[in-house]
Image (tube, one colour):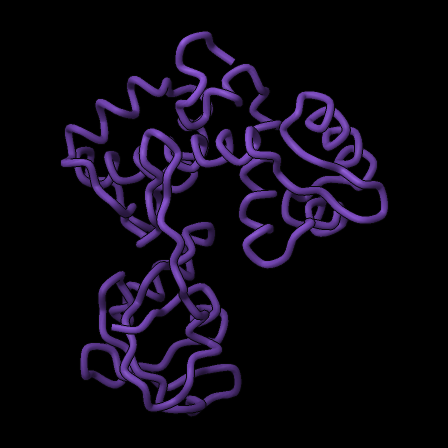
Length: 231
C-alpha cells in the first residue's frame, strides 16, 4: 500500500497481481448474494480449479485482504473491500470513458475495460472521470464508487423475479455477455427505461414486457441479466 494515500480506494490492491484483483472483485460481487462466499462458488465464478482458488485465498488472507475459515467460506476484510471498490471504480470509469469519448458500444466495452483496469493508475482514472463529468453510474447502470471508496447501497430486483403488472425502472444490466446486452438493447432495456412484466411470453423461456409502453418479448436469460427498481 502506498504511503500517504492509504485511504484511496484500491490502493490496497495496487501491489496485487491481476489474478488477485480478479479474486477480490469476484468475492465482492458474490458477497452481494451471500456471505461468507464458498470457495466452490468462487471457483465457479472465476472458472478456476478448487485447489488453485484455495491457494489464492490463503495468500489473500495472509495479506489481510480476506478472512478465510476452511470449510466455511471467505469474506473481504475492510482493506480488501476498499481494494475491491477501487478495482470496480477503475473498471466502471474506464467503461464510461471508452463509450462516451471513444465510441465503444455498451455490448463490446467490457473486455477492454477488464484489460485496462489492471494497468490504469488512480490518477488516470480520476482524470477520465473528470473529463466525462464525474458520472455516478457506468453505461450499464452500475454505480461508480467514489475515489474515497464510498458507494451508495441500492435495492434492485432481477427482472425475471419482478412482480407482474407493476411499473418499474431498469436499474442495471449485467455487462459480461455481449449477446444478452445486444438483446436487452434491442428491447429498449437501457438503464432508466420504464418496464412492466406482463407475464410469460408466447414461447417457452420468454417473458412478455411493456418497455416504455411498447410490447416486447425477451428470453428469461436476458431478464435475469436486467435488474429493476422502484421509480
